[in-house]
Amino acid sequence: MSLYDLTLSEVAGKIKNKEVTIKEVLDDIYSRIEDVEPKVDAYITLTKDLAYKRAEELQERLNNGEDIGVLGGVPIAIKDNICTNGVKTTCASKMLENFTPIYDATVVKKLEEAGAIIVGKTNMDEFAMGSSTETSYFKKTKNPWNLNRVPGGSSGGSAAAVSSDMAFAALGSDTGGSIRQPASYCSVVGLKPTYGLISRFGLIAFASSLDQIGPFTKNVEDAAIMLNVISGHDKLDTTSADIEKIDYTKALVSDVKGKVIGIPTDFITEGISKDVKQAYDNAIDTLKAAGAKIEEIKLEYAKYSLATYYIIATAEASSNLGRYDGIRYGYRAKDFNDLDELYVKSRTEGFGDEVKRRIMLGTYVLSSGYYDAYYKRAQQVRTLIVDNFKKAFEKCDVIMIPTAPNTSFKFGAHNASPLEMYLEDIYTVPVNIAGLPGISVPGGFGKNGMPIGIQFIAKAFDEQNLLQVAYTFEKNTSYIDKKPAIEEGK
Ligand code: GLN
Image (cartoon, rainbow, N blue to C red; front, top):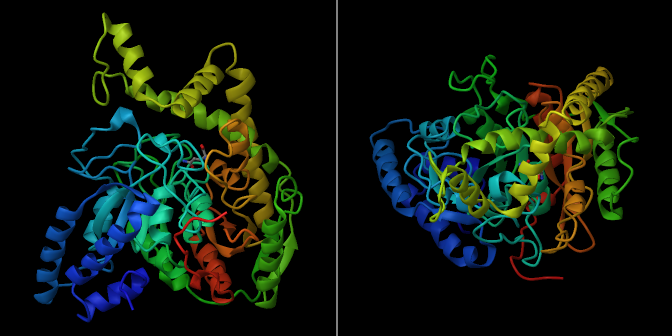
């Protein structure tokens, strides 16, 4: 058996017990990357030299009897919008093609303190804007389950890397679904924690009131382990919540007896494919059989989430991306006559189409004539959606919905209509709008062989209930046992 197909907790255990050396694990991961990466294209940058240096240090400490942390020696991948000291962080944009941060994001620091080894930075949609990883300036990541299809996005590289065993876990960011949707397309576990639970310091901002970092893992147990490591208050992020540290692995109990699972039948209607509906119905049966109580709930405003999201997210993006002016850092145009031209040319040449579309939309909804009609109303609807969830959680512990209405699509399928692509986010964006935790777990396969994800949503800071239900679902199904073929298909 290869080492690369172990789970994070298994490989960490083997390293700790000295059944394998850290170098052996790293050798195995990099040889896997050599085999598979030419087909999948999950990484923008590999950090091989740094990784081997760190492996040596960690092994020495381990041999000296030191505790090297829960992730001691475990190779992990990082989405390329999370800053890594001395390692390029590009956001998959020409604008940041040569940007090397001089500090680590707090999550990176935390991972390293827990002993993780960073193996590389993963591909993504440019500035995390997209649902397919097709807007990357550098390359298109392929879905390991069918190389002719997208891995989802925007954290498609992270999802594909974990799904094809090129990392034991990866970090992604989720503004409107960018962890959960690619997790569902690639049949891995993707967790978007409660807003404020994970520090955003060092995450390159897209939409600051929605962005949240979270892990991709091979199972729910590993998600809990990763959450233990990366969560916690951070003085460097003013939106970071100052709550007591929780041991999330305590929630790994396979039991849902007495738990109430909310099913928003009014929300799961349009646009959902037959296969996804079938998988969802099966998921309801699975949890029912495991002893959960299924309760119908109403989320009548959730259908306005997409419209709300694409106003708020673009407004915040237009402001956040104002800093790329060609002067302080990032791409600078070569020929210009005056300051205005320097700004315009640098931004015109440095940003891709989707980023420009978002900046224009955002600037429009914030402009003085339209602010009240769009931005202000979107904020008001946001409050209605938040209240909707609050009410729903009076009746249930955890809400269950599909992660995405369809399985992964072919490259270019939505080129003609960005709006069609936006519709893929229908089930993930409400969670960001309300700042809630959500997790996507493997929930079946469509007739085309492509994975389907089932999503659980809990109250803010109730990751324990979320993980317990997700863990129970995983234990009562066997979808995570199936591995992708990593070849072309229909
Ligand atoms: N697909 C959504 C968008 O394009 C979500 C992106 C994200 O979560 N980063 O905005």
